[in-house]
Image (cartoon, rainbow, N blue to C red):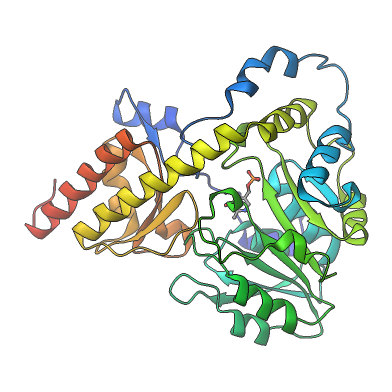
Amino acid sequence: MLAKKVFKGMAPYKPGKQIEDVKAEYGLEKIIKLASNENPFGYSPNVEQALPELIKSLEIYPDGYSTVLRARLAERLGIDGEQLIFGCGSDEIVEIISRTYLDEGTNTVMAHPTFPQYKHNALIEGAVVREVPLVDGYHDLKEMLNQIDDETKILWLCSPNNPTGSLINKEGFRYIMENCPDHVLVVVDEAYYEYIETDDAPDTVTELETYANLIVLRTFSKAFGLAGLRIGYGIASKEIATLLNITRGPFNTTSTAQKAALIALEDERFLQESVEKNIENKQQFMAFCDQEGLDYYDSQTNFLFVKLPVSGDEMFEHLLSKGFIVRSGDALGHPKGIRVTIGDREDMIELETHISEYLTSLKEGKKQ
Ligand code: PMP
């Protein structure tokens, strides 16, 4: 039995190392995972408190339309509920968009490196992928527009970008939207939206009123801390959302996830504290990098991509042996660096010590 030809060159997603595996492999008691940009402060205590309620009636299918969450989110965003699509993480929305718009004979434009699921899904649909190298961690917007032709269906903008953390600002967003042909769907993936610090970020949801070829993706996995429940959403015109909802599986988000997302959305305090602590801890980590002479990309997220004098794999292995899981740049298309999720301050101090020791041992020409 042969699968589609494209599967020959593809492999399943290789996630960051799992905590239990590392414990067993290195005989360590404590493992700190700073590899998947999860919220180190967990999730709203209100969700925790409601857990018994959240897992009631598990024999019943979920509300496939996510009626209650849809209404509440629409109200908060100032949009019509029919402009929303919910997914099993924003991962699934990427898949649904690709399934809806891409097939053989079409192409799609994205940055490199960026979130790998855009390419992965496009290839499965048989589309040609046009990757445009980042410039200093930023999307090369002019070149991305140059890559568009009559067969281009989707332009992916990851803002802030994973793995570099850099944001497309108001001017960049406007430049794209004003110059991108109408037949191209512009997807702005804002998985890290809540972490954005600058005032110079575009208000993409309001811009939906101006641009009919725009879709914005957001998630409850990052700042809201609900990655394990898998729920994310897309906001677009009603026309686009209707098409995507045709592709979507009938019960693709669980009732537990829908209810938890609703509670998380109401807990402004948890969100705000998570965001504030992230800014503080990121600044301190950046100060450490400055001190060590390590360069990094401008990040508007809860992670920092640090450039290294050694390969990312080498530093990754060293940190792993000390009980820290980070993400090597090798796996992310940027070999000389690591992507570090900003953890709590205590963990970051320990991580800094291990990075520092390794760099010193390199300078002294000896291996630890
Ligand atoms: N987009 C970006 C840029 C991401 O970094 C991630 C998660 N790593 C996702 C989408 C998917 O997140 P989720 O499926 O958990 O919503």
